[in-house]
Image: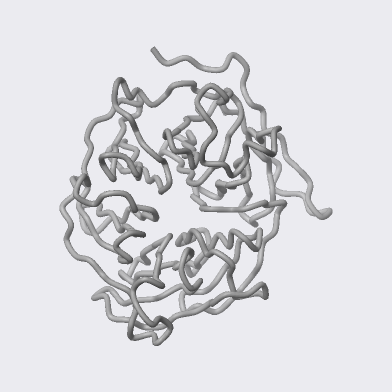
Length: 322
């Protein structure tokens, strides 16, 4: 039976740097034990999540299966990727014609791949040797991926050399941008990347984790803006309508408005010793407190799912109240 926290988490508008976001009030309910695992061990949740049109949550894990798929009620409907082992990390779900496909990053294989929703691997793409930025595949550890409407692919090498690599729809290398650094347009752990269709034309929103910020680029890799709305260590972003949810490894999720200004921080862990820690045991988990948010995902009803980086595996649902 699904149990939920008795009180809702009311999220009120927050003022940052004398700039007020759009006036909005959000309310969520923490849904304890949403993921109905039974005897199944989810394993280390060091990956990503996406929501499919048929109402399923796709979750990367480092457990027995690289992909575990849940329905709206938290029941496991399928598992696949046993042959992939640990290492699935970044992920994007893309509608092509009348079907959806998954674009995936794999750390251990130093490659990205395209798969069906049932786990059939359609192609793989290794490290960008053509770029001249790598001496071997071992330097390439992709953490994020997104795909533009014309099929252009963007891969963020967040655990490698901190470049974003661009390919055409046929996987031909186009360019790289970024590289390691603290100035605008560069990265220290470009962990997650999102195609931001709130802008016209679309732009790229990059979670620059160890620079404590998000950055926006055009689709040719030109830097457009830097956003620092009180972020600690942003891992990934997920857009729903005009609103952005940010998974912050240092113990909380942040909600931003259409201008990337802060609306609220959610479920901030009050104990700094539990933030950004992979080994917090289950008996120290508390309702209403995140540990190390690594990925975040909205569903089509505005509910929010959060994946903590935790060796035992933790996926939490925040049910939208209003």
